[in-house]
Length: 296
Image (tube, rainbow, N blue to C red; front, side, top):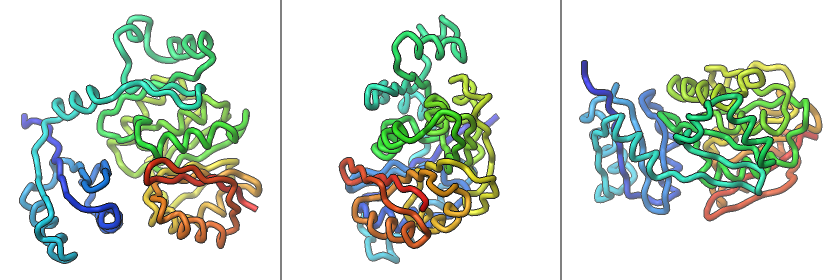
């Protein structure tokens, strides 16, 4: 049996070009990206040949006039990738109300991971502790966009409310909504690896009775009206979804979006205002921004 591999593509390009690239990538094997100031790392499943990746990216760099940009393609065994990913992560705290642990440590496992262990930690500390196993899905709470989404959710997720998490990834934002008192959360993603990972995380955090996971495309949302939507996506997709979100969100309902660079805020805000939303507040961290809006 062949070893499960990932392909890691590293490109030395600026943020503007990174956004153009992400908007143009349509390969089903594309799993996710880690963006830095002048470098982007992209992850692909091994269902695509290395030669195809090299040819595609070389051609793309030539098309934009950056033939000399750094480009590398590496084969990463799944076990190595997971070990490297886990070892680089530490627990984080958000506003002293949410603590995100990227993996279930030995002490937690000994007490019995899952509903009982997590509930115990919450009641003892007054802080909602969330366990996230990274696996194939990106979303451990360490990226600025995820942290800002969580921070913006803290004041508006009401007990008994109904929420949508679009592009759930690891399931982290859906779990946060459930922990904050939502009566029901629908979490959507069109990546089967992400939904498998999210399913495990939702169960581990005792949220299976609140969160419903759906394998679906965000552009084809068919859902009863909800009180809130959280979407950590690329800005081009957010703009595409602005009118659709307005049909799914109840009047007065909350919308939280991120995945936006500061220079893209105006475009995103304009698209949503034209779709019937009003801006409540904006957060920024580094070059990233998150918006909280409500539907008029």
